[in-house]
Amino acid sequence: MSGWLSNFMNVPAKYIHFNSWLQISVSNLIVILIMLALFAAAILLPFPGSHSKSNSHRGDK
Amino acid sequence: MSIQNTENTSTETPAPEDSAHEDSISENSQMWTARLRNMWQRNLPIDKLLPDTQPAYVSSWIYVFGVLTIAAFVDILISGLILAFAGPAWYHTSSLGLFVNSLHFWGVQLFFVFMVVHLWGKFWMAAWRGRRTATWITGMVAFLASIGTAFTGYLIQTNFDAQWIAFEAKDGFNAVGIGAFFTPTNIGQIMLIHVALLPLVLGAITVMHVLLVRKHGVVPPMDALPEIEA
Image (cartoon, rainbow over all chains, first blue to last red; front, side, top):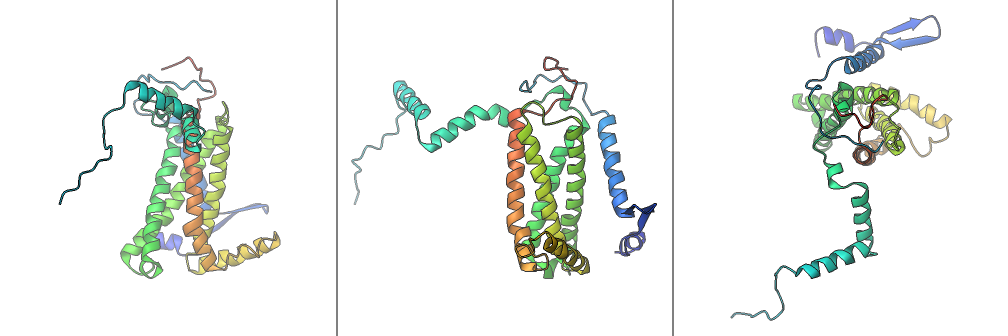
């Protein structure tokens, strides 16, 4: 591994401290932010062809 | 020399009354195979098992993350099989081995990202509604089994990171009293658990989870009415 990715990944983790009660590594924070962004996008973005008619419905709710 | 077979080898189609008689026997049979088959047909007929249409509300990106998780799981299984057969001397040294090793590792990262988004989506739409409790519970058990599988995977990286994780975990397991049975520093035990036991457990739970989704259907949004079809 070389370049900026190596500089980012092949070093001890960087930690962010919030006051004295919470600390989180930058890597974990990035993963959590990606998951939140994916969740928001999955809710908000329209699904291709979602206006097309479906002729089936499961009724066992 | 020719041998004449005098036994009845007829392959003629049985008469309709014979077929009906066999069906009757089959339905009333107390054989465990018949009971299992009847139970399966009652609970999960083939049109539910392999549907070709889905309700309109499934046309949303939030419903995609379950199958994305399974796709990542398949990637992990295939790359893991290759790693297991080729061995660490290959995947730690050759370029192709490092690539497959990376496929396995990053597949796990995607697996967890997709599964967490899937979990959030199902949690906020209360996916245990409508007799789907077992579906929800098998999903949660799959999540816990995945954490165990990933943990044992990190332990067998055979690097300093694995050593650090193993010795931190050892203290934790000793503190809760299971250190005598589960030893993170025992690489043979951890390797077998990771490669043989946990993938089977996780695979079985996943199959059960998917079958339950097929049986009860995909959970509708909170405000969906049963009569509405878009």
